[in-house]
Image 1 (cartoon, rainbow, N blue to C red):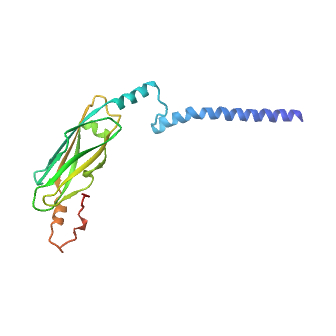
Image 2: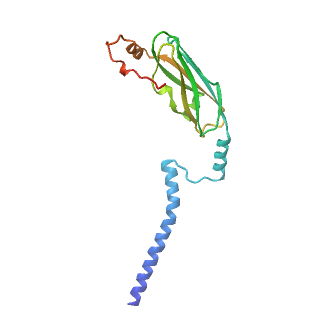
Image 3: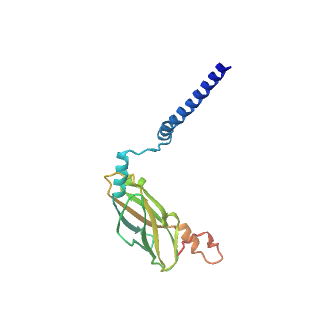
Amino acid sequence: MSGTRTIGLGKMIGVAFAAFAFTFALVPLYRIACEKVFGVRLEQGPAQVAEARAAVARTITVQFDGGVNSKLPWAFEPKQLTMQVRPGEQYEAMYFARNDSNRAIVGSAVPSVAPARASGYFSKTECFCFTAQTLAAGEGRDMPVRFIVDPGLPADVSTITLSYTFFKNEAQTAQLNLPAGTAASSDVPRAAP
């Protein structure tokens, strides 16, 4: 009977050792799976830490530009022409728009980021360009844009230009200016003041 106990004890120690070894093997296997399957790097060596610190210490110049299409009687311009930003942090810039006509007009802004290869690293988190904007005759309004520059921006890009062009939204403007009772103007978007 003692021989059976010895074999049983040996099997239990073997299973415990195998479980212990398997547990330690999971750590590198998990890291490899994350890197190869999901593209996520879990461990950072000294080189990656130095790169991350350099990206945080780096400053990028963001230039702001704004204009309107010739069919839109609005004035539109950035409140500041440049801003120094650190990648990975959120910033807010303001534009100002004014309707110089004698009637309400709906406009839509089209953004552009230059250089083109920087556009994938420039993220707008809040922007007046996401929706059409309605301005009453003579109305002026500040229009904010919140953005983040990705720390992965190529090192040779030191300046990004964010430009907007406002176009008249003909369909929504026509609907907005219909005589009362002709059609409901509740479908026309109105931006918060």
